[in-house]
Each structure stands twice: as C-alpha cells, then as structure tokens.
Image 1 (cartoon, rainbow, N blue to C red):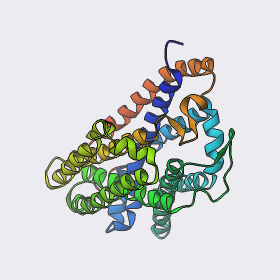
Image 2 (image 1 turned 180 degrees about the vertical axis):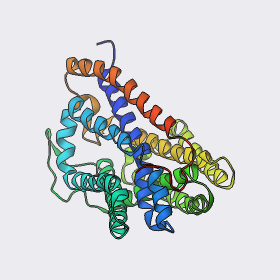
Image 3 (image 1 turned 90 degrees about the horizontal axis):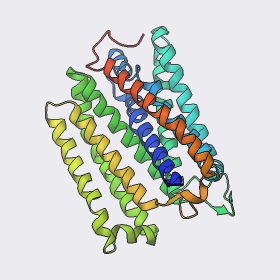
Length: 335
C-alpha cells in the first residue's frame, strides 16, 4: 500500500472525536449552566441557542465510535469492556437531553421545571461520563494478549474523577462562551462574567493534567521535558498561554465570537497535548494503531466511503450553522 492507512484512519477518527467534543461540547455546556439562569425566559433563550444544531453535532460521536469498531476492532474490543459503565451513563444522559428538546416547549408551565432539571442532569451526567471515559483511556487499561483483563470498576480512580470534573468545567466554558456569542443584554453579561471564572478553572485543570501525566509515566515525562524533545513540544504550552490571554481579552472586548474561538483553541491544544503524550498507542502503553488496525483491504474500502461521506457531513453542518447564525432573542427559536 502506498499510504499508511492505519495512520490515516487514526487521524480521521481523532478529527471526528475532536469535532464531537467541540460541537456537542458547547450544547452540553449550555445544559450544565441551566442552574445559573435567572428566569424561565432566560432558560428558553439558552436552549434555543443550541436547539437547531444539537442533533447534527452528535453525528460525529457516531462516526468516531463506528469508525473505531470498523477500523480498529482490536482496540474497540479491549476498550469497550473497560468503559461499559461510563459509556452507558453517557448514553442515558444523552437520551434524557434528546427527550427534553422535544417535550420541553410542548409541556405545561407546571411541568417545565422537571424538564429543565432533566436537561441539566442529562447534560451533567453525559459530560462527566465522557471525562471519566477519557481518563480511563489515558491512564491505561489492563490487557492480556488481545483482551481486556481488568475489572468492572477499573474506570474509577482519582485521575478519572478529576478528568470527569475537568470536562464538566471545559464544556461549561464552551457553553458560556457560546452564549456570550449568541445572546445579548443581561443574559450575555451574566455568562460573560461566568466565562471568566470557568476559564480559570479550566486552566487549573489543564495544569493539573499536564503535571499528573508526566510525573506518573517516565516516557511521557521524557517527551515533554527531556532535551531535545522539549523543543518540539514547547509551542503547545506557549499557545495555551496565548489562547488564555485571548480569551480573557475577548471577554472584556466587543467581538462576541472571540471568547468562544479562544476556548476552542484551548481544547484543540489540550487534544494535541494528549496526542503527543500517547502516540502511537490507541490503547495506551499496550496496543499501537498498527497492531489494532483491520486488514489493509478493509481500511482501503472504508476510506472510499469516508472520502464521500465526510464532505457531505461537513457541508450540511456548515449550512446548518450558517442558517441559524445571529443572536437569539426572546420569543425566537425552537418550538
């Protein structure tokens, strides 16, 4: 084969997962921020800010999960048993949110607080479960031969609980900065202030992870701090500092899109940092992307479908965001 198909597919799946994180992340974040709203009208504005695009955002989750199953079946068979509990919790949370989008606006005023609570809890549970699953993968799972060798509760550790809390703060930041972009007046000012506090929390979690991982794994420490590898990785923390400065400056400025784009930059750089720490393993410290890959003929066949489908997905996603651009005002939106 003239191309390194496992590497190409690892890159495609990584892009799909990142697209899900940043796109579904902000609408999960809006749900997490529901308790910070001041009124029923404000909560309606918040949910209308994400209602037109939330279901399309989750396309990327299906693409990432389905791609992992088809392209890296060994990794899928090892990781899924290790992640059953957080994955089930995530799916239950996402189902709750999907039901709320359909029923909240059609319910009576008396029952609407129950739907608001379901939206908040579904968003919180789904986000925390995603963070725990990420932490489980990063810390590594027990593998014997070609099978998962751990127990039901191996996903539960101080590190995974910390990454779960970190993702809640991160998605909250994406949601708050999205609302800064999509709203105006008192709603915008409230979430502009909250964005600053969430940004401090997110930067704190980035710092904790950036120290925890290298100190727990000598190989990761060498990639980040040993000469000459440190010169290659140095731009990542420098750019994190630049994005943080841009985020805080944007919250004080008048260009409402800047804080959200800077928050996306923080997520991208954190994602790149994880890739640097874990590459070339798809199951950290156990299975590489080449060991986990399906046969070359399967990878080539599936790549043809991806080349056709990915532009279509990108196209309708971009079109949806273009159609629903602009500010959300009271009385407008999803009904």
